Length: 551
Ligand code: KIV
Ligand code: ZN
Image 1 (cartoon, rainbow, N blue to C red):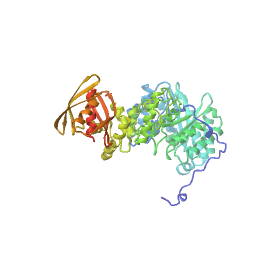
Image 2: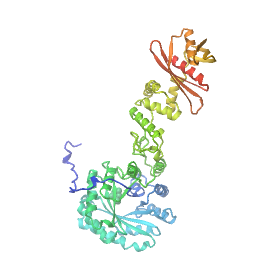
Image 3: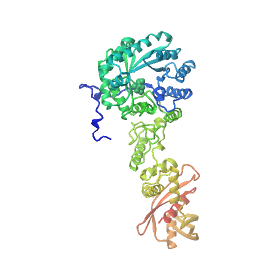
Image 4: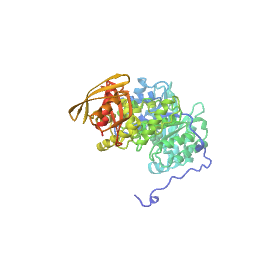
């Protein structure tokens, strides 16, 4: 890298807009959305989608609620043309969905594009040409006036062919491609020249799409450019101002959100941000960002998982694990303190049904987009006792007492640390069983019987101590007190029961009860034990033996 990057690179010049309004505004409603997955997204695939893949993705986009879908570049290839014809001839497009097609300002391409649209219900013809200084100089070698002439001629060629689309509702769209790198004054001039040809009105608007073809500046600069155009262009009320951002500086979402504040009406983008280089705008993120502020995004991501499946199958792309909202790890907390906070937040919600969402670390309720709470917490060596307890409780109904959690948490963490990976709930339960429930040396239970008379319980215990049979009797005010007394009669050092709880296990092979018991020895050592049995009394006896076995 250069020691002095300013010798090679320079900052993008800011827009002079001292009275900019957008920073004081807030978003209150969803924009019009246009998916460009089947065009911009498709153009960026190593292997572009075939007709059946495009159809599957198109149908998913329709189901998600997109009313404007750029279905392709019909003059670019036979597949693209055939796809248009399939949609139109087989009636795949619902009546309220606009089929958008892209075309350059060239006669042969416009001709073929119009041909591909015959018989459609609603279409948007989207014409573009590049307008930035670098494109004018390097690619076209043309002056501003010559570039403007290309746009005007293209606009005329489209206008002159509209009579061929009888019975089709047509909306026209113009993009000064590389708008964000173009001088705003020239972007305005060329757009107005196209407007002069197409003559939009407030009743029959045209779309003016202002692409951030390559992100070269901070999102506030794009917002200034959008506000400048919205304030200075003529007949603003005859325009639908549209945003089309890419993500080169990783601020495509921010640029879009600020662009909406700046006055735009419409947003183009793709699912999960597929597109050239670093991608197009991720529409899912912008829509769900609105949703998390309580605004209906007018797109339905209630089953985001199935949208991801279709997307991955059709495009061959993968949704990264940390992709906002959609990534596999988005609702997963690894840190113990996060897990604890989430657990408390979720518990609070259960007590206040209907309250606004305010769970620490979770921007939205995962269930709203078809994810599950149990995905929230997994356990690795960094997880605290809260995460361990949550997983045991949510997956197996094992409700460890608080103090028990403090003992088992570090034991589980040590074991996970040794494995060097995160563990599933089932593995965690196996650790718990090994440490407590299956501990049967030195003591294990053969039988335990009790009888009660006048408030005194007598017990008869048959046990194995290191495999050798041991028998004793004891008495007390309950079975456990009798057991503790009995141990004393055979010379086992004194201990007392300091904590006791039990509950039924919800399901599984041990459709039984689990008992948790803490004992404390005369020399101050305390240990927890757990026992499982179909008989609650035997479960607690087993828990005492488990605790003794852990001394
Ligand atoms: O990124 C871009 O500028 C485009 C245009 C064709 C709209 O995709
Ligand atoms: Zn693009």
